[in-house]
Amino acid sequence: MKLGLLFLLYLISVNADSYSPLSYVDRPCGDDLTNLWLDVIAVVDNSRGMTVNGLNYVSIFSLTMPSSLFTKFQIASNIASVFGFGTRIGLNASEPRTTRLGLVTYNSVATQMADLNQYQSLHDAFNRIFDDLSNTVDTTESYLSTGLTLAEKMFNDQSVNSTRAHYQKVVIVYASKYQTNGESNPESIADRLKLSGVKIITVAYGNAYGLMKSLSIIASPGFAFSNLVVSPGNLVGQVQTSLLESNCFCPDGWVQYRESYFDPASSRYGVCVQLVSLQANWLSAKMSCINRNSNLATEFNQDKHDFIFNVARNTKGFAPPYKYHIGLNYVSASWAWTQPTDRQQVPLQQPLMWLSGNPKPASTQSGVMNMQSGQGTGWISIAEMTGSANYVCETYSCDTDNYCDENMNKKQ
Image: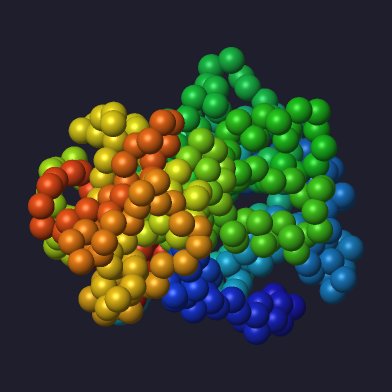
């Protein structure tokens, strides 16, 4: 039966939409689940509460699974569904975009069921996970802290100092209750993991009092879910989306653009910006960004404009009155946004954020910078080769469309 279910999973695929900056929207994160490149550890509560609450869970396999096997395969089928859209599991010398999957169970203590190198294919993971999660432990004790501590140790031992140290790391927690034992607080361990860059996805399994609220504190912003509030297919999709977002990141020194600077849980884009506190004229700033494998930043909308301003306000070397070069310039008789050398420049569209009296005649002032005006900034046209200011570079994120090696060099 497991082989038949695996075949069904393989029939489903998700492909990233083709993106062009000419659409005048910012690039989304890559969405190709077959190209996930992560190190993931599933941390699964296997106390008695998981069995009881499991009766309320509807698996995507529930219509084809005998009732005697239903409870046994609940979490296993969810994990298999999440990675069953063609994700390459294990190591592949010729393809770096692979995902390693480890498995931890916990109750009063935690047990490593599979290290990060045990599953070497989707088929392998599919079969073994069903076996590894086939039983619960006859105890009501369920201490998430033990599971998180073991996951942290596994990352430190098997990922941090390896050839995959630059891969993003994710913990997926499936919990039926939230308990502390007075010795180890799961919140402090979760905070330590998140500070080290690990993303945490939580699934509240059942309706134990305060479970969803407690797990929301454990989870990374926007990554807390419940098996009770959505249909199972949506839960699979939510976890998959969280994995794609986790795999969409920026190198050190770059800031990932998101819808709201002030809301860490707001939607992220596949765009990174770097604010450079080095005085330069517009043309030199453009060349400097090119040397960083990027281009001067675009501002297709007010949200992006405001986001960059807020990053500038919180970047050392930028001070009021704020002014910095962006990628708008006058070329071929029209205003356009600079792009990398292999892409067409993007003609300027609405909205326009010119300060009063701008733009000046393009024959002498064909570059653009942002200049503070009151509590915000606006565009002013400037000469490309005189004057100096800080500047903002922009590049695409590392994600499923762009593999980044240990030196953060992108490879499609």
